Length: 380
Image (tube, rainbow, N blue to C red; front, top):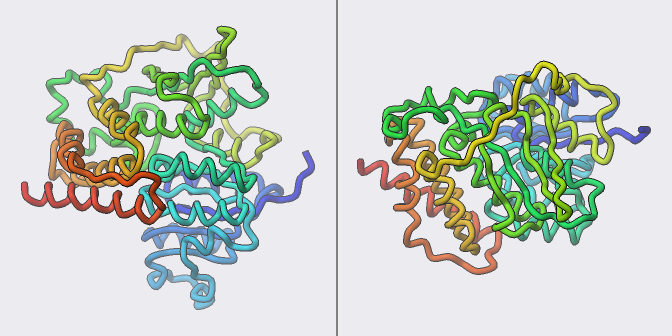
């Protein structure tokens, strides 16, 4: 492998995935240049990143609070501007929420390769984004562990796909009696058994909304019909997904839970990293790999989300916005854990969907649903 350095713009650099992306860049300085950094309000971490990586440009909603030298003001741009920065060839989309929707589309139009961890962008606009990426010869590379696993299993395969099998850990409440779920706290929900993640995705994992989002991602990223995508609970989180082919053969991607592995796979594409800074899977140390059927009574968000998403139009956008607000309400102790799914259903039941929406219409639908949930919770 003797390729030139890749120039990165990292949207969401202070979050969990963004920070781990920088860890990968730090481990392989001969392969990556960090050209742009984008963050929201975590100025303390962003300051440290700026001092270490010396980016050419940054995006930060609270840039006036940065304590770095006065030169930083000359580097401040919008999120879209750092996504299409002329010195960048790969954009890492590691934000949460819908803030990266438009910047991602703008980057694809400019021919930037996209390493994407942000689920909302694909949930809201998966069909349009994949089509745009194909027409612009852009690599759309998932860095979430499950879609990355499917991507890795499919590379080099020409055979027909029979089924995608996405694994789920079951979250922190896999063994909690269903009748006791109304008593769980935000602190409980943030204690994921196998992954260290941000608050929003941790709660989504506990409700299994996160897994519904991954089904939606797989539908568009890999062009597989809804009915050919299955989810099974796999508590060990070692098999990250599987692909069953038409000849009856099944391939799986295995690794210990470590987001650096899918991040490296995307950043080094089409190669693999020349050396590992992670622990490879050792079957001698792993006693067993187990699987369970997904319990719909325990995870009502899963089926509700897929029912909404399959309607198309701006329904997925409304789902995304409603979920974001419902999770915030739970984390703020305004609602119970078991009220998340009912609140989402109640908020968007009269959504008026738009067929073939623009990104502007998607964002409006998401904001509308977010505000509806916020109003409902403020009345309680």
